[in-house]
Image 1 (spheres, rainbow, N blue to C red):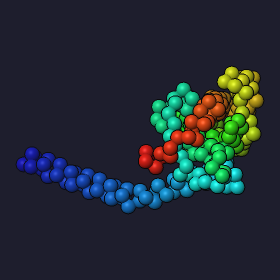
Image 2: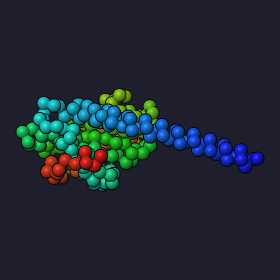
Image 3: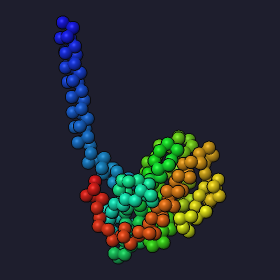
Image 4: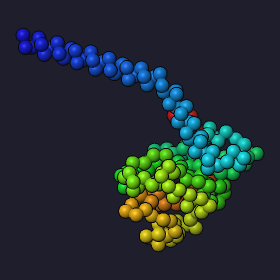
Length: 213
């Protein structure tokens, strides 16, 4: 009798789990194209805010290649690089990069730079999980700290000024949260150095982001 009741309850739970899974799968299938479109719109808005439409005449979002270089870009996963051209000639690029040493883990960033010298046009945060009220001040909705990068670039991989003020550099840190801005400053500097070393390869590479996704 008890065994029969257990089987019945197990069957009910199994059916319930199947229905829930089917609902989740169905919801994902119905919304995935809309989610992808929203992600594209969000990326494009960020790109347009950093690289003005007047600066290029190509399809910035789809003129994109994938880069893999963990020492410079902070991840073994391929990172998108969006390329801006005018009259077919390179004018700027925006590279996604990772700061792996944030206080609560990796911080995903995008860095836009002029071609060919790598002067920074803008930096934005794509994803972070830093401490609310402290490390999350890197978010544009909280402060304008990221604007400190605009118009600057490190003089080289060992530029002493490319650091937070606590380390003798030029960038402000947040009270009680030095690790987060320090990680971002280092990641942005490495990304600029990578761009300078590989800028022509980046612009010569085939567009491949759509194929990878």
